[in-house]
Length: 223
Image (cartoon, rainbow, N blue to C red):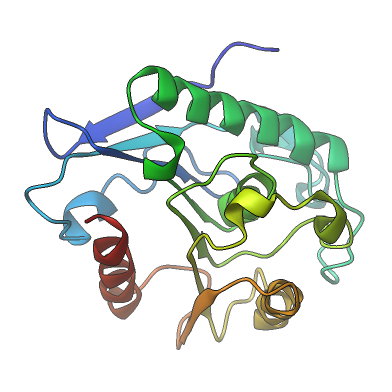
């Protein structure tokens, strides 16, 4: 197993009770979502550690093989049934699982750990969270989709069947089409996952109403 991913961390209090591991999108880095921390307006009496890891640098096929930070290679964007980089997905899953274990070693139980991600980070949140053998506190899935969706029924973890999931997407997203998010939602709903789903009149981005809804979702968990 390779060494732990590099991370940037923010704590809302010295006494940490929850951890949120937040995964960036393709070509971004660990700093991409730092500004969202104060905007979430989390309860002042609860200490939260935000862990923002850097994805490995790898060549990305759809970007002419250019090397950039990515959780896995993207070979085709034509549909959810794209030729998935299964090896990259599973390797990154192991690296994220190692970050969960690190939080355990720092005193945070798994049921106080939330996985969150945007775009590719959303895909990794679902890839990892739905398969993780211990119950997580929640999954936050922004502007992404469910990868390897044909294997999830055989690989899902019963421990996270009741874990709350927040899925948000832009109605005009030109990068990850709304249809991909809808199909992902349908697959998970058919497997009886409980999902809070929101669509917003935006592109491949995050908007203020979405952050407000996400804040409410988190406040329900952090209590």
